[in-house]
Image (tube, rainbow, N blue to C red; front, side, top):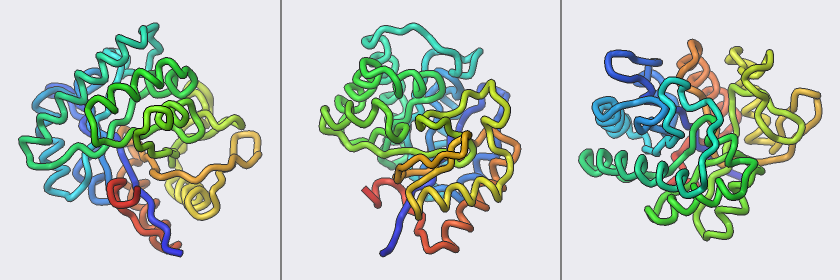
Length: 255
């Protein structure tokens, strides 16, 4: 059986004169990009440049929406009402969609970032708010944590959902991501990350921090673009997936 998987990365996460990561090099290995929309990182110029770079690289574009938290890079929990979360998401999606239109590409997906992602994965009301924004935009895929509250929320709203797994993050036994405050939460070994991803994609399991196996089969694999080994890891994961007979394709071609 021919197995296909999407590889995504968080890009465009600079601000003003400050840049983060080598987006062009990462784009050589991934099939989808989550472009920061100005709330945790990014600004209008960086958004335009990143979408243009994606278009030139043949990589699908997604909106990486966040709480309004530039100082905390969107990784600080915020006590936002569901209506606020909906408004934040709709605003950011619309902004990136305009840049996509200007570049002649379509917006493929929406992916929450950081604290918004993690809180909504556990809180159905927040998940419903994000889903509502995606549904009201129309025609785009929601990307979120496999086995989380995003799954029933997307199903109830009748929108397409892509279950996401992480190449460079450790998992707790309940399927949640290990908090970044804990040692070992972020995986820096490219070969180890690649072996874990091949296991996820071909066997439908990942080994949790306590050694237990979590059952899930992801639609997309995330590789963070803000780590020093991002370029090497993306290339290594792609190489090992293809060596295992897995084809790398954007979500719009696999779902």
